[in-house]
Image (cartoon, rainbow, N blue to C red):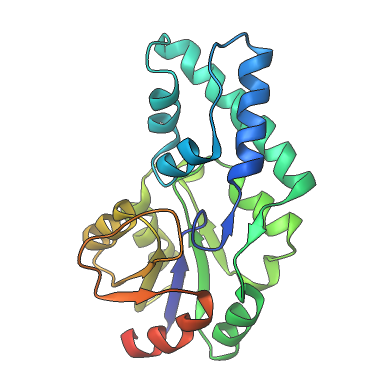
Length: 210
């Protein structure tokens, strides 16, 4: 039976907020936008679709201009992340190695733009651990549909999703897969059945769920 562990990215595998803030504030300055964001503000928005994030940051901006601003923010953040990387959560390499060795298919599904997951894989040399990844920027679909897409594409029969926000939990309900809450991440989740406080705890919980 093909079994998979599907990961969220921000607040689950890494913390990229500092570099993302740098990229977005650089864009705001370049474009003459009277707005500066902070790590705290951005972490509170991470996990939402990109369009929802930019709307929350500049709600009064004309939609067409906001779309163009988002594209430039994304390009600046990706360039910064390719250069600097993010902060990997402890035990990531050991945990991913253990899951791979036990035969689990590993993938990433995140509500981000096309190109963002690639910065994580490339800068931190994580490509060997992951079989697939998906995001709205590539598929045009949100998290629940992308979870199902990755499962169908790789002929996965059973999967679990690891994430840190209520949005992640809700997407799992829609996709019909169990959810493991990464409590060390950025968000809060109500009534999570499975919880980890570090990546080191994940293999034992995955074995329990799958």
